[in-house]
Length: 191
Image 1 (cartoon, rainbow, N blue to C red):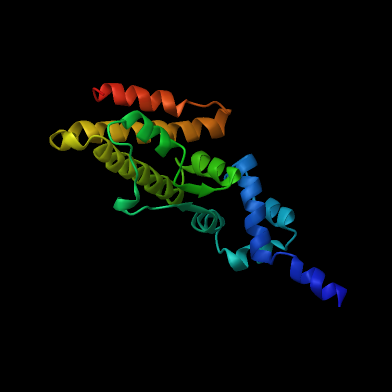
Image 2: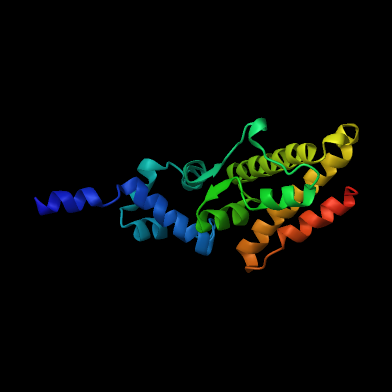
């Protein structure tokens, strides 16, 4: 009886492989992690890795697909403080649409230059941050309908800084103050 419950408490082999990959890819990088090391860390035979993931890249794709999420909000779900674009952007910065562990965040930014699935996920993140910022700024500055180009530039700048901040944080632990960036963008918009 005791053995059955202990076995049920253990993650299945596929989950152990993904757990090991998340740890190793975050620490060492995808290219520096061999399939043999991955199997050892997951405590499974190497052949079982290939049973679940025919190629090593399939492990990375599964991690990105299953362990990262870019939360997409409907247009009417974006909030703003009318007349206060700085506070609006500051509030947006506190609610990142990226749902991922710190290890997965490290993997996303480390592997973005070399792996399409990672780059696509980061592209969706950038698109969501940009879309939220553009919608929020339009709500915060309702009289600016005729100046969409400036709002687009402001939203693009805000998204770029937030994505850069995430990358910088993962690589160095340094942080950019999103409130200062929001204030700077608001001043550039003339508010």
